[in-house]
Image 1 (cartoon, rainbow, N blue to C red):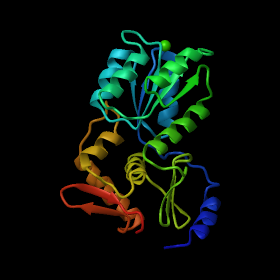
Image 2: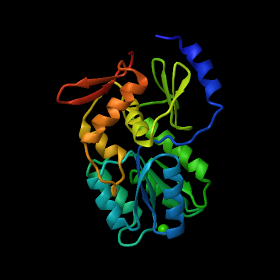
Image 3: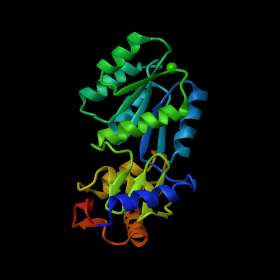
Amino acid sequence: MASECAVQVAFSLVRVSLDKKGGNMRVLVVEDEALLARQLTAALRRAGYAVDHAADGERADLLGHDERYDAVVLDLGLPKVDGLTVVRRWREAGRAMPVLVLTARGSWHEKVQGIDGGADDYMAKPFRMEELLARLRALIRRSSGQSNPELRCGPLVLDPRSGKVTLEGAEVKLTGHEFRVLSYLMHHCQRVVSQSELTEHIYSQDFDRDSNTVEVFIARLRRKLGPAFIETVRSLGYRMKAHP
Ligand code: CA
């Protein structure tokens, strides 16, 4: 294994070139204000996430039960069913995805209720999009048991902040879907991840999904990264090796 230190130095050198086309995973935005919903969805897509949107609590409740999200941005004041009820229902049903709650400015009782109801973090409106993105990255990282902002697998480093992947310090160019597959596997390092689980985490709801394409993404990742990192576990799925 290459020394961590050497990798770190080389990595910081290539990091200067900023080419943001990378991605993260799958996020649900629940917001009834059309303009804010559009801004949030656009910013998250630019950051590489697959994004679904719900404009009321009923739809959010349904999507949160049926789909697999890596994080949710949830407004509390919503038509039909309020956000607080939605997060409580999810938690009661065992849905554990991290939830970042959006509250009205200065509404401390909403924050307290939100967090008591099962939310993981909150932001008061208006907020800076950069801060929201940083908090989401931290929530996703912590929910998958990672504490370091960079995900490492020997000489392979993935940085969810910049959407960049480097191998022995050299940048590896990946498409958005390839990045999401790799990002999900690296967040869940050493765990066997099935094809259907990967499929559920890399596409937004309106995307025409095909679990066979996961095989294609894995094959392309192996071509770009070498065969050592992603192991096929027969009839179960794939596993990212911690020490290739
Ligand atoms: Ca609202």
